[in-house]
Length: 298
Image (tube, rainbow, N blue to C red; front, side):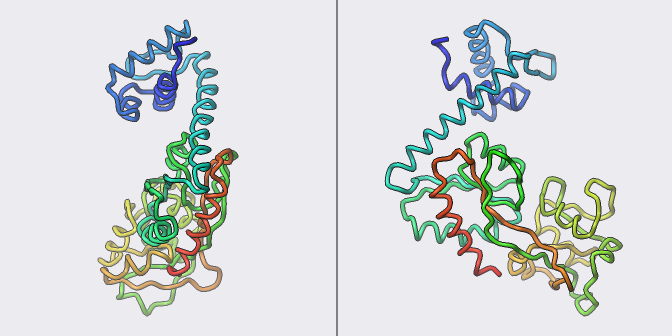
């Protein structure tokens, strides 16, 4: 067992997660033959197979599944040692790898980065914008330090800190600006344009309208709020957007924004990180900065 290395473990974990040599090799930024050779070397060192190979798919053996649990624990511990070293240098980490969901990033990130660089001039900031599911996975894999998402996440290994609440507003064409604002029941009868599957904001909008996610529906699914607002400007439907996006997204389209009457649809924005991370004190300081950054957007 003396020949086991962290490189072996990282390559094994990537292959176990992706279930595909090509995808795992891409994730590790190496060639597929090189990955295959490392996995073969690992299996020879262990004296047993870790994967069952099929023409188009591979899966873990029984031993491989048990091995994967231990390997993930080891890799997480190694990542946490790196975090500990970063935290002990001068009281503040030197690098922050932060993830943000797409319905927050364009509107809040400029203020966040401005405040962070002003407060911590030597801090190197790396940003990752993607969907919540991917951010959670990359947090657990140690590829990110923290993420800004819509709460709750309810992952037992992650800490959640609430930052602020934000209302949704209705966006409709200027031609409809003087009409009464529809309630959630009326919205179900309208052509509601939503983000595509995978965006948590889509699920939140459907929940407000009491529409079950996954049901067939007429409308347009877009990959960004910008696309949805521009389509509303052509008169083909209405959409919901978070309050922080209104100033940016409505200035270049013939649309109007209106608040709902009564109880407002809303979401809770928070920051998450691994509970075991030794950088918790730094993340709490950064979360306060994020709160401050958001104040000017409401």
